Length: 248
Image 1 (tube, rainbow, N blue to C red):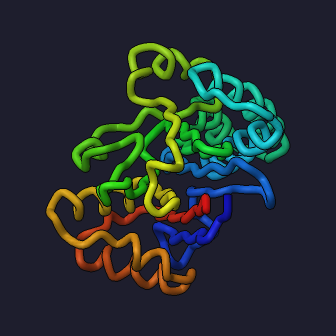
Image 2: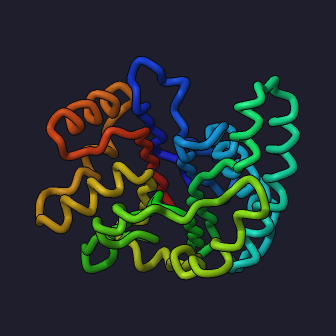
């Protein structure tokens, strides 16, 4: 797996440090992850980072992979103690402590490469996209643009939030195994929800997809493109992150 692109644009261009999206990989690793922190959480930026790092580090060490419901519980079991430790080290006002006690929330889009397959795990509305052998766009886990209008199911930093994740909402997230032979070319596009909504909206309107253009951009190009699309009303104002992976 090669990471060909990793580009991001903050919701507020003047404050890139406030970006709550995160993308993480390790050199020569077989796993990577993207997360979008919920803006109404106390410290979703840190929670998104720890989720990505936990997923990646766990699955870079596992020799044989089968993703299932228990896989996300494993990630949470690793991520939560790290997050709790960091949260305790920060000086907090009583109001921030109350907000922290309500939990922090973020999506998680994880990718693991095996010899002939790619595993995808998706919780929330960050999506993976690829082109199949019939040159058709495929996406996971969100497949239609109206789905982005729903409140996404997210991963919480406290266990009490798991009742929905593993209960009534368990059908809204999941894992798939994608054969490399079913991808043409063998490239995977990862994106957080604002860009995912834009992509599927363009596809549903039979308009040109931005994937080729995005694949050629550098960080400055991407930031300018995001701003232009926001001004045109085709891209929602939100933290926006894009990554391009190759499995050739």
